[in-house]
Image 1 (spheres, one colour):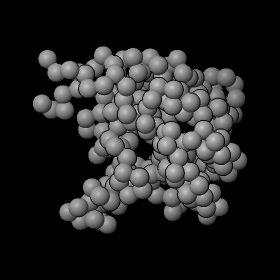
Image 2 (tube, helix red, strand yellow):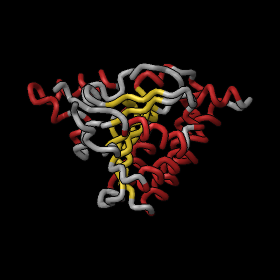
Image 3 (cartoon, rainbow, N blue to C red):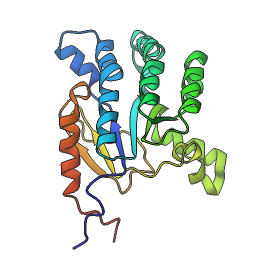
Image 4 (cartoon, one colour):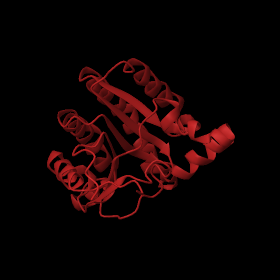
Length: 225
């Protein structure tokens, strides 16, 4: 029987789902769900990843499909990026975290693009953990862009290879109760272990992260062998 390669994944990817339902359940405006994750949960999960010796943490923050939401919600998310990204990135920087981004930033307002690019550069020598934010990211969009740019060698043009050469995720977590990947890291997750939970993202804390890691530790990864 194949042995477990490692009880701790090197790369964990999280589909951050359930913010809006959490806000509704608590009688709050939708943006408050997004805000709780941006202002609190990301840093807590990064701290837990560092303590657990995880090397890479990738967070799907905004998809190519999210532009189809109401104009008020999209505007609120853009303003939330403006308010919280630099503050969060600065705190992560002080912890020795490198910030990276995948996705097509070109659709974001220029001030947001400039802020993101500043922190990518500012943190590029940090070694404790790589936190990658998937912004305006969709798996099909990534593949189409890579094919157009790279032809037969398109894998080298995937977002996860262009900036920082991210390894493929060992574990992909989806809070929020849905049991699908929705196009997150379509190419890269073919051999990832998948973990689904009904816990909504604003409540996906260190205890829930630990439960996902404990479940992963019981898996036997065969990679098709």
